[in-house]
Image: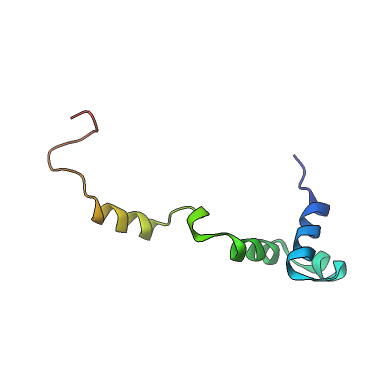
Amino acid sequence: MPLPLERLAGQVMALLGLPATDVWAMTPREIAAVFDALTPEKARPMTRKGLRELMSLFPDAQGKHNAHG
């Protein structure tokens, strides 16, 4: 499936108010950074650190190896 480049460029122009020449000069990493900055924290995947923190808050019960006991 090809990337919808025109739509992506339009979104970046609308969000940042940049002219088309500046948007087309951006690298994929720069464009990804724009969308990453606008993504709510709750919509992002959990990090390893976040998983460790969650596991420390809710440890498995001793002696139980699965949810069925």
